[in-house]
Length: 458
Image (tube, rainbow, N blue to C red; front, side):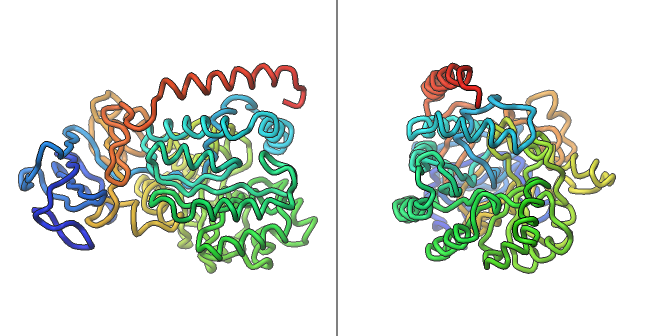
């Protein structure tokens, strides 16, 4: 029987898609797992969840079936902080401190090589990588974001795509005084064009954006009722610079500007003191933990368990491929929990269920769309992934949640559904031609490598 509550289709509706006979991690309640169950999908939404032997099957030839026998079915992963066009710079500048990496390598590379075409193909490659590893929704911030929007639309993924804002010449923005005008026009172009994509603004950091720029970005974001993204307290160098300049720690400085509230998404948040964390909690700021990038750049370890214990909403992100070097959220979960345990000397810290929430329902809440996605429940949008169990490292299956967090790899993701549309089935892409994208990116990056070799700044 198909449930018909929460705006779901009627009991007599014919399913568009059925995911059959899976072990479902719903994320609707702590530890809720339904074995040997079917998920019925109609008009992009979850219309019902039933035990396989009880499912009424008013199927037609148009009903697509995904057989999830010997597989885990769960909500799609939410990458709450990344820069997908930076797939172009994967491996270009490794093993460097953040300031040198950013100012001596990445900023010059972006200035030299980014244009609408390269951003489009870098974004397509990022979308392919995320689909292949089970991410169905992500938050992005970069430049030439019209190109990123086109790529995301082609991919079928769900995203918050934000125009980057920074107070010096940047790709596509020769005059920094125009950055907010360009960001506002970007939002106006895309604000009502897609149910899957929401435009926004990404302010690089309180160090690289003036108070005037930050307040202007905040005003625009409020006007369109969209969240503002920012890097916050990523390095101790950044914190010290801001304290020297403003005599305030970063969170208190942003609060003075009036932009600490529930619509701010702050990534990294490594070097916060207890008072700052407390203020972020009181103002309901959303946090994104980015452990692998923080580790690689030697930025430090965020007090993520303290934040969660205090009740903050904390999502999980990969950052871009120039500082990670992958977009695999399954890998990010494994790293996040183990890093927290060794940092706190507590093997119970950031347990598997908690980190899985960060990558699903809490990630969705971080982006302000937890009522739509992040759990498998009747009435929610069908953003769902299937993880195969027919590999040695996924056997035996004592605890599905533990296996997803500690054992699964991106390559174990077999099927990906977003908004009821199948984006990957049996590891075959449905929306993007993998070979064409890889060939184009390889050609672009061959040119990057040639030019980088002639440019001492790169």
